[in-house]
Length: 191
Image 1 (tube, rainbow, N blue to C red):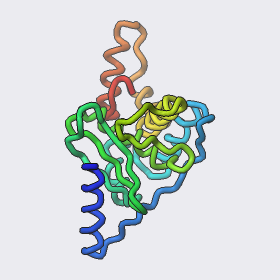
Image 2: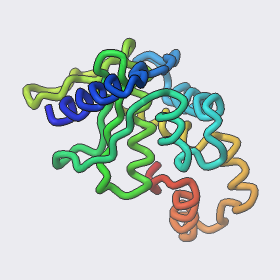
Image 3: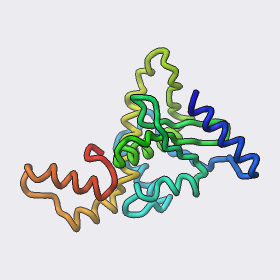
Image 4: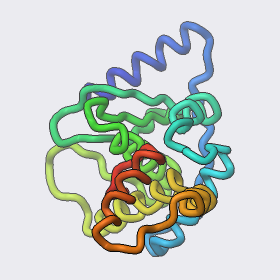
């Protein structure tokens, strides 16, 4: 309800200024039956198509706002919510919890972009606090995570990074390598 008021206010003020409020997102060819690898590949392709560069997390917000006319709100969300995708008429919005760490915010933004791009094929559940998510929703969330990984860490950028900083030979150095790579890509170590 609170986000709906923010988005409605934005739409109203944009109309008063004479600005367009039509988001220009295309759709991606993923379905509930798509593999996680296909979702990663699609994220990689979207990253290249949007020309996000070698560290997509740095440019993602501005590209969403400038190229795709998507409203991005960094706000204090209710506890337990790190991000949300909203469609209100022709306006697409991504809401991100600004109190999360940078890597988490980046990953959530890619995750929510997936929901906007697959809205018709895999609509996210309306969260109203009444009832559980549909059984297939866990798979949709996993696909969204895979897409976000491909979007924020496209294959060419990861290969370039590994070329400069090869994987360590010992297993005890691997967690340090992951942390440093995550910092470089502005994502979480888990991502």
